[in-house]
Length: 295
Ligand SMILES: *Cc1c(COP(=O)(O)O)cnc(C)c1O
Image (cartoon, rainbow, N blue to C red; front, side, top):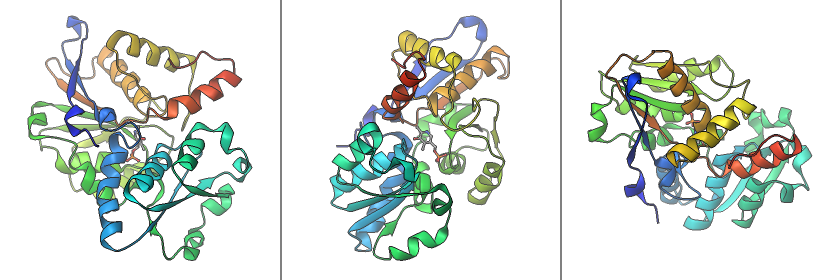
């Protein structure tokens, strides 16, 4: 069901004068609904939930969350009831307007919509003792263990490993399994100074860096330049990028390459962390704003 063989390193053809080589690891192709890093992060959590005898999963997310969709599908696939605590009580009764929530509901997920204030409240979960709880974005120790399996032995040849960053779980796994000679570059998809500290808790190496210039104003914020980049990238390389994470990372990598950030001869590996389910939801917002759509 999961097609790990499809997570190949695909070469991106660049103008020769750039003097670097760029590959993209197609983690997005592992599975249509539990793709990319969400597969990696759920793998050991699902096994643990089964092992401990849980029959219900509980998790948290925003209305367009790739994580919510992945947990909903995983629940259906592996025989768990699922409950999603969704940030934003204004969404109650509007599930049909939102492709991610519609998909998740059709997988059997139940929802509890909460205000943004209540969402931040830790006491919220006291009521759900019989659920296996997966944190927002899916990041915990078992998720990081899963993300430590993204890099293969043959990836040792790369000088730079690039990844989008949300909660920092994926980059932590990559850092832990990287070689001392490799630099890990994280491209945060949101504004926030907390990430540096969060990641430091999970890793012991210092061969990593956050490149914070490409969040485009914050989480799920997007502009015409980014939409054009994603569409041109798809047309040229036949690889879809999502607007929230991988599009911003790839935009950043191209910008850094053009600015000469990477020494000549560098071999760069970008991780395609998936997230393609989010395109439909983003397009419905773009349509309202009369902006061009992601193809
Ligand atoms: C969730 C997600 C991320 C962020 O991963 P973290 O482990 O939270 O940093 C990156 N890319 C995609 C496509 C995602 O869905």
